[in-house]
Image 1: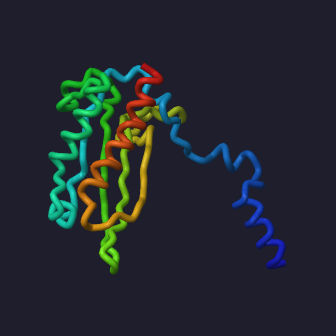
Image 2: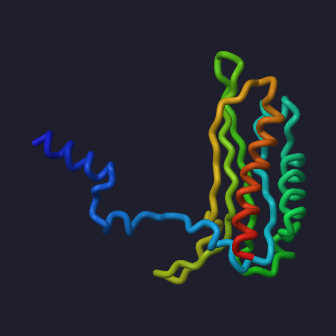
Length: 168
C-alpha cells in the first residue's frame, strides 16, 4: 500500500494530477493585468540595516525604479489619491539578504504589481492582490552587493516595462 501512495503522490507532483486540481490553483495572469491601467505608484519595502550599510537605500531604489518606468512612458503617481484607477495599482519592490560564511550574500529580490481586484465569486474587493510578479534569488559577493542589487532591480523593472508596453 505505501508503494501505491508514493506512486500516486509522484504522479500528482510530476503533473499527472486530474485537471480539476490544476483549475483550482491561483496563477497570476501577468501582462494582461496591466492592460488599461493609467499608471502606478512605486513602493520599495524598507531595507535591512545590512543592505543600507553597503550604500543601498529605500529612497535610492525608489528613485531608480521610478526613473526607469518614467523613461519608458509609464505614468508614476506619488499617492493613491492622485491615481484615477479604482484598482490603485503600485509596483512593489522587496529586497532581502542573508550573509553566507564565505563573504557571499544570498539576495532575494521581488518586483510585483499589486492592485485591488474584484472576486468573481463573491464580488468582494481583494485589496493588495499581486497580479504581476517577477523575482530572483542569487548569491552575490559582498564587495559587489550594492551594484549587483541595483542591476538586478533594473532587470526586473525592465521586464515590467516590456509587459507594460505590450498591452499599452
